Length: 241
Image (cartoon, rainbow, N blue to C red; front, side, top):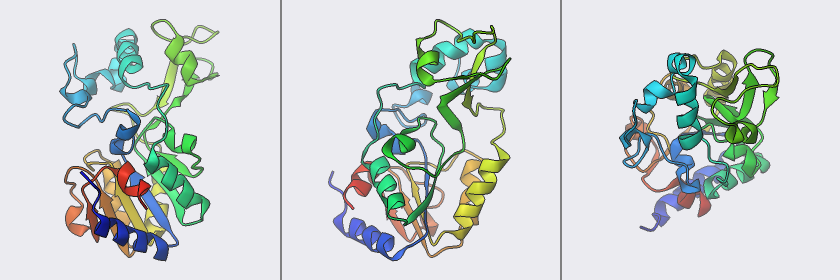
């Protein structure tokens, strides 16, 4: 399937006339980097496990069964070899040009930063930040991935990823920053997200700007409000700009 040229041309026009773009993205931004989408047809939610994924990556499950949590986490949520795709690279380029002011992401993979983006608000945290729950020492992703079973600090404490689990609240500072950027944007590009995870999805209502663009393979609840709706892979769309 080729990308709709007319729609890409319209997106190019919008980007060219905009000076304050904010990008709000989800799992679909990273699927072209080989990271599965939880809610897609072949995503994690449709695979079979001893417990549902929502249960395993919840705060209470992490507390009661860290061994099973980490078995799933290392197997299904860490992708050491993943590389930024055309979407990540184009967004970094737009930031470099001064057009893109912020990326607000629901992803935890760190690929935006790897592509060169600097102002990234990670609503759900990052697999690249890991801290001992006892002494607060920092550990990188490789340490966690290479550890046997539950990763432990030199002090003996359990190392917890700086990832927002189910039942945990998003950081207030991240939410406030996201609201500020979205409310001041002249263009909001929503990409690779079904907009079903709250409170993150609720941020969209703060947009008061000129152009709302939605790039997503499946329908979203914001489609009817969009000035431009593109049902294609985001990497292919942004990569062809």
